[in-house]
Image (tube, rainbow, N blue to C red; front, side):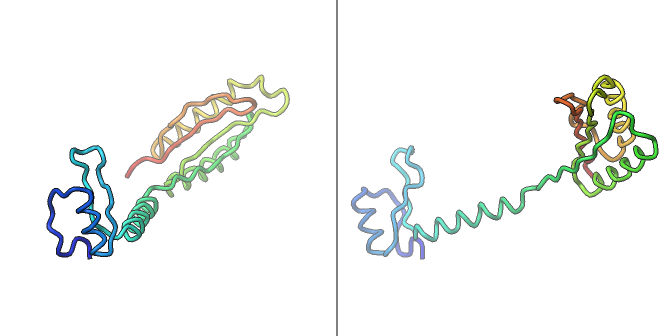
Length: 152
């Protein structure tokens, strides 16, 4: 349907509009900065529909990142640590990112070093499943660290 029986070439604007009207289509400016400007005789609604369809396809192909959170206390015990580590391993194997954080309640903020050591130990034990994208950072009462999955 697009450009049926229309010879490609350089036409004055009036002639191009006339050709588009005869064909029952629209004259669409493709590249306005070119000399002379580039136009196409096409069905504009179909053109918009195709563009929308392509954008939707690209959006569907885009990788969706899922972030799972794991919360620790500054005095987290070994059993709890291992339990949460196993969950993190499962999350990383599924392709999700893991956001591990130590939450300091009340005056436990004085144990910042313990929280940082805990997060670094956590990252070290998950080394073969993921790599630390962000080292421990204290934000308010939380010390946060992000671990991303390893590429296969």
